[in-house]
Length: 418
Image (cartoon, rainbow, N blue to C red; front, side):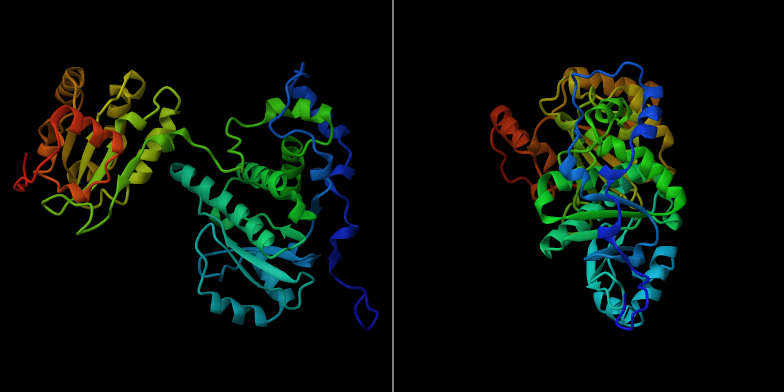
């Protein structure tokens, strides 16, 4: 009730049923059709926790109408997006919200920023920016969306908030597939409550009718309401369930590619950008090579617009680390012409006889135009004639190996070519 006795339009979250209060019968029937013989002796990575479930509320309604400590607004980098959620929040909060948002000077993708709630039932608004989804950059989008949810929760914790009302952060305009995004949202909240559950009393997922069906389908995977539901949900979990905080774990990221953009750092003697690839950090037998291909392209895309060189450290690699010729051929075939045109040299550091033979065969019979760009570098002293040592971040094991095999390097006149 407001001071004049009229009914309030805002919804008190204490009046809403918790996830524990929903019947699980229908969901179990659905799960049982997918899993005939669940393994009762194997626990889910998201085990049944009645205390955590009691903090979760799934509510079909407008997040702007929630009476809780803070609600979440999903917007763009300038915090001016006109999506359904933002527009409703602005209408109910009143004109002072736009004035305060201008003081924030925008918000980067994955960040979270705080304003007052003004005329809302919520005391605060936490603004965040979800990623624009492109399938070829899925890895980056997953990480950014995780950061949205994680940073909202972290801000709530730092401000000692007791409750947070989430909208669905991946707005339609940004194109994130709803089911994929829901997995990230639910597991991030679940992991946060496992670690910091004492800091939050309620987390509300405010959804539309379409979103409600997806959330009802996936909530039992991360918040099972009984041991039986946990058991039946286990086989339905995706392969990537994130790390202990819910963050996406992509083995392809172990393929370490580093680059220092622009002069005077990270350039060779001709002023070309230097990329470093460390062979020993490529876990070939563990990774999905299709995802690895996308990751290579994602990392290289902004570098390949100008001339660049690659330094590949083959130091102490094993069969476990070798990319096969089919993968390299596919990579070479699918990348844009700018990658091939602007690649001026590949410095192959600490090659073995076998690797030289494989590379010769690959560049002679499999691809064209690459053979003359390969330079075999037996020791770092040789490399430094083309790239000054301060321009490269060296893995310690590479320096140790070279010093052991070739002795410490000494000052040597620079030359643009090996």
